[in-house]
Image 1 (cartoon, one colour):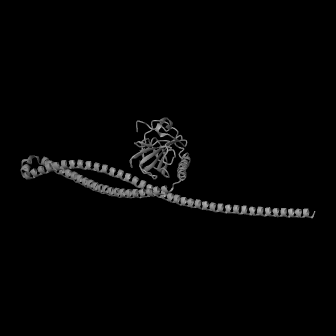
Image 2 (cartoon, rainbow, N blue to C red):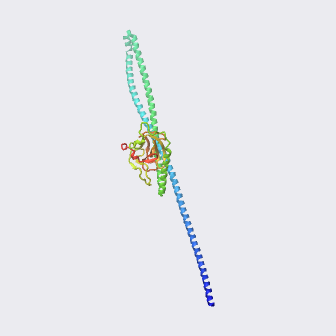
Image 3 (cartoon, rainbow, N blue to C red):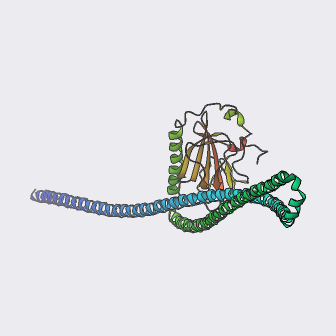
Length: 399
């Protein structure tokens, strides 16, 4: 009986010991699991902090790069506006020189006519002098022979003196006019020479500005190379697109005075297939074609030489004439009834906002503004703010 009691006590003690051991192991395992979890959380937090730091670093770098790009874009814009002003001044100087040359031609014709008149007057004067000389050599003899008609002889001599004075006065007047003509011609020649000098100086300035613009475009190219994230490029292009859409929205009601159907002109809607080309050349980029960034074009790019004349496709009014990111020097013509035509990448703008233009009138010169590498003209048509394919509107005959 005692033995059975001892066994029972032993079993109870053993059971208690096992329970205590299990409890200890469970507590140890729980503590170990909690420690591992805490370490994992710490490691995750550290990695997250590292990732966030890298993201911030990249973001700051991207912002700085974009800020540099914006500064460079602004500098290019300023340079291109200066070039446009210089080119416009050169064209004005060319027109002045041409006008002065025409005036010189007229003056030279007048001088030739006056020289002919002067020669005739000199011949007449020489004949008069010969007559007077002959009369003077035989004066006594003639007076003796004309004693019976002294009054007639006196009248003849008086007439000779009168004609002589008249011719001398006329010749003096012609000489005076010729001198005045020579003075005017000299002044015009000096002015023309001054204009040529100014034109040469302006050409030098334009060349320097072109070099500056090339340097700025080189900087833009280098900075663009750092923007390897295609999404950043697309976002920038999206800003360009939004910029022009916002601009068109603002321009929609600015020139509401343009009649829907201009007097003596066909409605723009009926000019499909009849519009003159803005510039002669091959289409380098078609409507809807994707560019290097993957963005579809809303217009066409026509290849052209730098300085080629850009023409308005139809009658209208200048609604915008300035530099716009993505389009360079841009002209927008409002044709009324919701129709707009856009002309981008220009070297210079020859019209101002509010100017009326006729079909085929020169409004700009072609170039590569906006950071382009090759010259050309970006042409776009819009109706109620939506782009249309220009190829169906342009005349095949005027290409």
